Length: 166
Image (cartoon, rainbow, N blue to C red; front, side, top):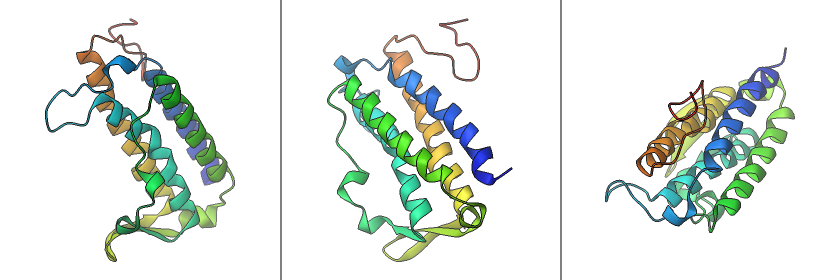
């Protein structure tokens, strides 16, 4: 089995779970924040929807320097729930195509995240995908589920039934 085959089943599961959460995001509360230092619900959802974008940098370049961030790396909050779900679906599909086209040698090649030329971390691309795309998505999905709970939005099943769907 190729590395990509093992990763794709996990990727598909996690992205489908995130999509189910996005389908419940109340767009009338996009501006709501649980705390003054927190992102708004719309900002958080938009950030989470954008995370699959990073697969492109991880799989097509040897490094990424945060000081050279392209404008589309930090998009504006979505205009609507439909726009959020569509943007996410497009980025998930593009990342999936890249992962599926990547062989084991490329998956095991080093990738580095830099800031101002200084190395922040370096690891095999497979590890960067798991950390910077998968785990990062799971982290922010957890935040989003708390935001939704605080807005009394019933949560979908993620790793088993929720209190709303038991």
